[in-house]
Image (tube, rainbow, N blue to C red; front, side, top):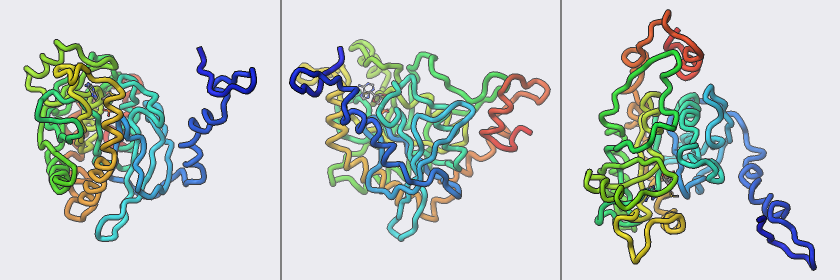
Length: 343
Ligand SMILES: CSC[C@H]1O[C@H](OP(=O)(O)O)[C@H](O)[C@@H]1O
Ligand SMILES: Nc1ncnc2[nH]cnc12
C-alpha cells in the first residue's frame, strides 16, 4: 500500500507523487549542480562514510566526480573536498558514501570493487573508512570509537572480493588487515579529542558478518568467545580490495549498540538504536575526521599518505599469471587499475 501524505478534500495523493518526496530524492544532486565534474591533480586521501555519514559537512566542496570503472560505477558520486589544515594549507580529499547517497545499497550490495578502483584512479593511496558497529565487550560503550587492528571474516562468499580473477591470478598479504602507520596517526588524533566527549579504544578485533539481518544470540556469544571486540557488515571486502589496490586503509568504528548478547533493558540491536547513537555522536565523528585530516596533510606524513610502502607490490610480488596464460577481460581491467604494471 502506498503511504498517503496529503489529503485534499477527497483526493489522496500518493507519497511518490508529492513535491516534497521528489525534492528529498533530488536534493543531493541539486546541491551538486553547478559544481565542477572534473578535478585536476591527484587526490591522495579519501574518506569512506558509512551508516549515518552520507556526507561530510563543514568542508568546502570543490567538485563532484562521477567515475566509471571496469567494475561499474561506485556506490555514490565522489565529492572532492578542500581541507584547510592548521597551517593554512589546502589539500583535496575524496569522499564516498559506501551505501549510496540515500543508503540504498545493503552491505552485500555495496560496490566495493568500483569504489576502491575509482578512488585509486583519482590518485588515492590512503583511506579512512567509517563504520557503525555493535559492541561485543562491556567496556566498549555505545558512542565509543574503536581503531580495530584485526578482522574475522564472517561474510559468506557472496560478495565480489578480489580484483585478481577471471584470467589473472594475484595474492597479497593480509596478516595485518589495517595499516599500522595510519593507525598510529588515527589513534593520536582520537586521544587528543579524549575528555571532550570522545572515548577511544586503540585496538580490537572486528567481526565482519554477512547481514543484512543482525546476529543470533548464539552467534553473538560465539564471537565474544573468539575475542571479538566489535561487529559490522562492511569491513570486508573493502579492506581486502584496498590492500590489493596498494592503498593504506584504516577503519574507524563507532559503537552504536551491544548487538544482542547483552540485551539492554530487554532490547536487542535495531536500526533506530543505531541511527540514534550515530546522530547524537555525529559531531564527534566529524571532529575526529577533521583532526585526522589535519594531521595527515602535514608534510611529515607525505610518504605514509602516498603509501610508498605498498607501491608496486602487485607488480613485483602479487600477480602470478604469465602473459601467455592470461585470459578474459582481466588484463584489460587490471591495466585500467594499474596503468603500466602488466604491459
Ligand atoms: C544500520 S546497522 C547495520 C549497518 O551499519 C553498519 O554500516 P557501516 O559499516 O557502513 O557504517 C554495518 O556494517 C551495517 O552495514
Ligand atoms: N550489532 C551490529 N551487528 C552488525 N553490524 C552492526 N552495525 C551496527 N551495529 C551492528
